[in-house]
Length: 217
Image (cartoon, rainbow, N blue to C red; front, side, top):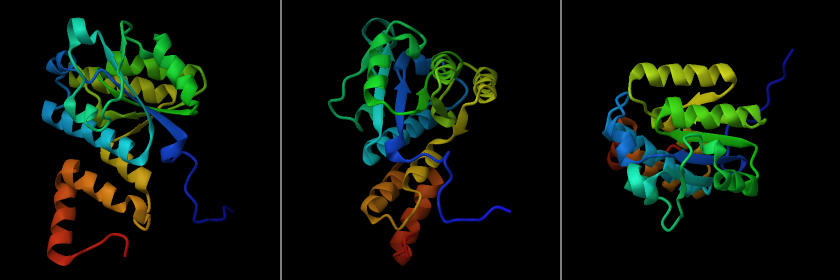
């Protein structure tokens, strides 16, 4: 008979236990993305970036052929990490880039969280590679996109079958907070949610403005 305890499950993410890798959020890649609306994609990517920056998550930002073909990374992401260098690649599979892997090893976290464009190429490649090398892998599926819904869904299905754990952008933010009594990050978390959390963020704004509500009480 199991004995319940007030402790989190081992597969839940916490800020210090993983590395976030945001891949190829670039204009040329976004132009062909059809599985998710571009505005929603940018919003979700911004939510993920600001959550990671706010909680001090080890983060790698990487682009492909930035100067010659794909263009700069979304401003919404770079704004969360002012001055952070981009690791530019030629390889479609981020995991085959020596500079990225050097950074992954220098950080030394056993869990990798991926988000980026396109799901079926630039996310499948590193996900399957990292899993093959013994890492735990999470994919933020609504901060990924592809040239069609079919391409995106089959890619997610393939990664899940291989052992990756899917999640969403708002879920990522709230999983890092996980307890409203954590006062040191409460205002930051609700602030990110109000800015990028859609209807949930509007609800927070309404409750705080009209009733002075607080989730921590």
